[in-house]
Length: 396
Image 1 (cartoon, rainbow, N blue to C red):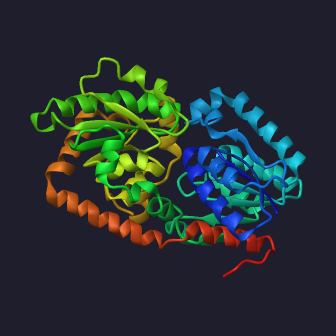
Image 2 (cartoon, rainbow, N blue to C red; image 1 turned 120 degrees about the horizontal axis):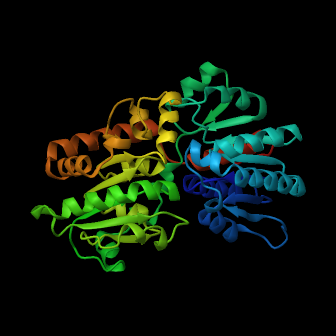
Image 3 (cartoon, rainbow, N blue to C red; image 1 turned 90 degrees about the vertical axis):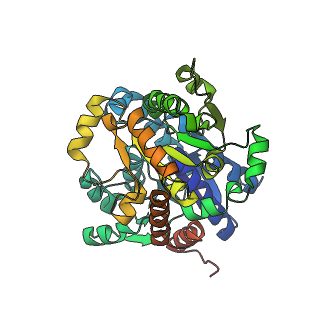
C-alpha cells in the first residue's frame, strides 16, 4: 500500500513519525512518501526497502511553517507554489491514500484536490474547527473520508456536527513515555551537556521563526530579572532550541544578556523534565510539559497586532492551551499578548518554585489531564484503524 503523508510543523513531524512506525509494523508492503521533518525521515530510513522506489521525504516542514493571518497573506505566493508542487507530486506518485496531519491552511487544499481526483483522504489530528473557522466542517465532510481525532473533548463536538471520526486516545502519551528523556537520569543529562548541578528553568520560544522573534525578547528580560533576585543567582536558564532551527535564530536576542542563557538543541523533553519550572510558548510543547510533570507558565504573542486583532474576533475557545481545554479550566496560567511580559512571568514562576501548595495543585491538575487523554498505544491503534479503512487485514 502506498501512503502519502503531509505534516507541516514540528508537532506533526512527531506524530507522523509514530504513525509511520505503526503503518510499517502493520503493513509489510508499506511505501511512504511524505512532507515532514527529521523524525519522520528517521523512521523512513530505518524501514525503507531497496525494492520500493519513490518513497521518502519530499519537503521539510521548516521550508513552509508560517504563523498568523498577516504572515500567511504576505507569503501567499510561496504557499500557493508549495500547494501546486504537492498536487503534481501526488499525481505523479499515485498513492492509495493521502494522510493529512493538522496544518489546515495547506492540508484542506490538498484534501480537496485529492478527493477531486478520486484518492482516499484521511485527516489525522483534526483541524481546530472547534476554536475558529467552524465553516471548515463542511470541507471535512465533503473531502475527507475519515477523521482521526486525538482529544477527548472533540468526541462530543464532532458527533454533534455529524462528522465521521475515529478516536484511539492521544499519541503524545506514547511519545513522552517512550522517549529517551523519560529514562535518562538527571546526572547523565547534566554531564552530557556540561551543566552544573544547579536548578534549571526551561524556556520554550516556539518552533516557528515568527514565534521566536516575539517570544525571545520577553524570555531574555524574564531571565535577566530572575537572575537579579538573590535566590535565583545560581539558576541556569536554558532555551530548548526548536527542531529545524539553528543557533542563528536565537543569538540576536542573547547578545549582552546578563543571565547566561544557554541554547540546547534536540533535547526539549530532557530540558523540561529536568527543570524546576518552564515558560512555554503555547502549543503541543505545553501539553508535553504537562506529561513530563514540570510546572509551567504559558506565554503567547501573536505575530503582529493585525493578526491578534483578527484572532480575537474569530477564536471561540476559553483557553489557548490544550491541557486547559482538556479539563475545561485553568490548570496552569496563560499570559497572552500584552500580559505576556517579563514581570508577570517572574511572578508566576516564583510562585511555581516557592509555593509547595501551588506546585502540588498543578501536579494534581496534570494527573487529571493525563487521565483524560487515555492510555498508551494510540499511534499503533490509529495505524491499525487506517489500515482497516483501506481494507487490509490487521493483527489484533
